[in-house]
Length: 118
Image (cartoon, rainbow, N blue to C red; front, side, top):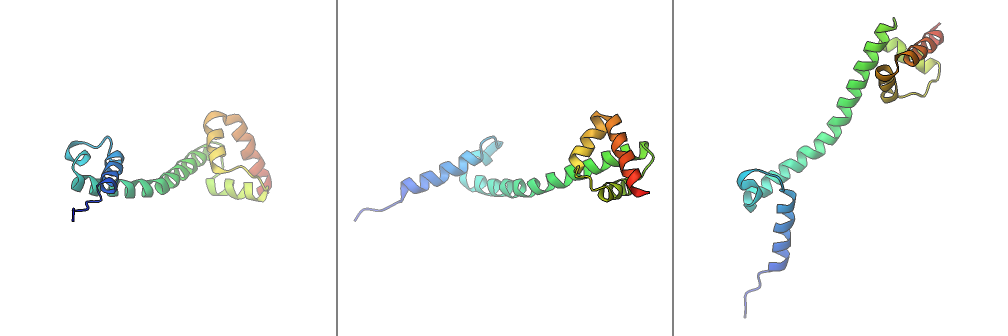
């Protein structure tokens, strides 16, 4: 009886792994044992970093809004509370972009929030 190696499936698995390792440096791109560990680690970092990116962007937006609010004479927390009181639906991404690109309209929004606080 001849030896069954399951060659097609194993070749496909290796090919898939090496495709994921495209761009890796050294033996990590063309030796299966090194490649599999490197790819698994890279995929884990990739999954984690997709979550971290959202966290970092929100932090950046808050920093930008805070700086622009301080320029307009109000703290970040009071500004956000004023927007909530005024039932303003602008999110932090839009507010941060407005603070950077269009300070005049951001100042108008700050005035709107200040009015809602009184």
